[in-house]
Image (spheres, rainbow, N blue to C red):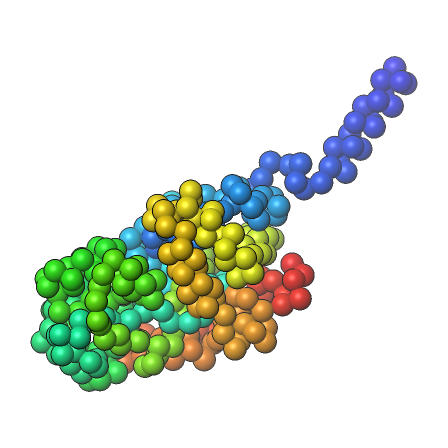
Length: 330
């Protein structure tokens, strides 16, 4: 019996000393704003690179149609984390949702409005009375269009807004709309498909609001800080990899992204997305850090637009305590 007891004690001690990686991984589901497209290759490359697996996380992705849809999927319990935009966050906070922004995915505003040169539309003021396409009314294209119009004294009543889906450059090229609200990567693909000469009105010239952020329920944030810290470390590693090795990411996107057939186009899209992942703030403090001044200006702008009714203190919503340190430490 003494030998058996010694064996059991040894087995138990070995189990106690087993590394975290030997334990069952924690599942984390991200609700995205899009289908699995090439600009999020750092997430799609998980089977190939294992950034999340290395942190003891089994990653899952729920596709969506716009940042508002991503946030709603998370609020409905279909995901733990929303890959959404500040506009969707402001609107949800205004409705009383208890949310926390935990990571600044793309600090740069990548939204724009595009019109063919033949339309005569050269500035935001020229959009008055025009038909403008957006991805959906739950997308950042819609919210950023409203911000752009507001900056020149226009509102939704001054234009006709038409949801046209993610491939909204086709209606523009076919003359079904006069202009379309889109993103830098959408514009890149449209040009590759023969868009022609176009004028591009950049929203960031009016308000450089972050394009996308990670958002969670306040209760999930309070209850899962160690897990979220591991998740953000893994995401930071995946983003840093795509920035450092865009060519490798472009090759992986061929098999992982639904729009990734053309490796050369993948590379250009990935380069654009890498550029939007960095800012003066992230260069000083590390990937994922918030520029609270920009987030607050966005909230104040939305209030002045009448899109939200309450004053939002973004300093109490955006938290940086779980974001990895710049030196790479978790």
